[in-house]
Image (cartoon, rainbow, N blue to C red; front, side, top):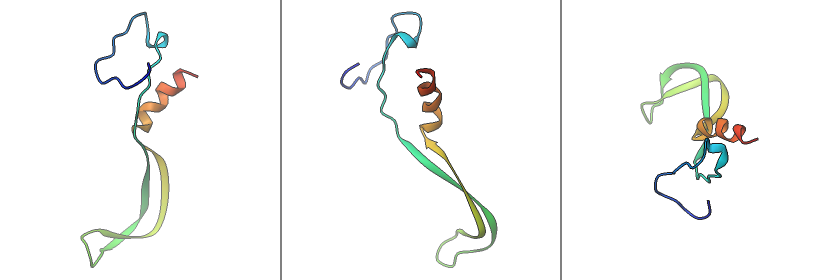
Length: 73
C-alpha cells in the first residue's frame, strides 16, 4: 500500500502473505536493572540500586513486530 491508511484492512485472498502492508511502529529499548536497593534517594521516593547489572531487550512494539517481520523473510 502506498500512502497512509487509517481505516480497516480488508484481506482479499487466503492470507496476509498475499498483501503488502506498511506499518509505522514505535520500537524502544527496555533496560532491566538488577541489584540491591537498601535505601531511598533523598531527592525523590525512588530506590538507590547498588551493584547493578543491566539487561537490554526490545520494547514498545518491537516484541510484536519481530514475528511479523520474520514471517516475511
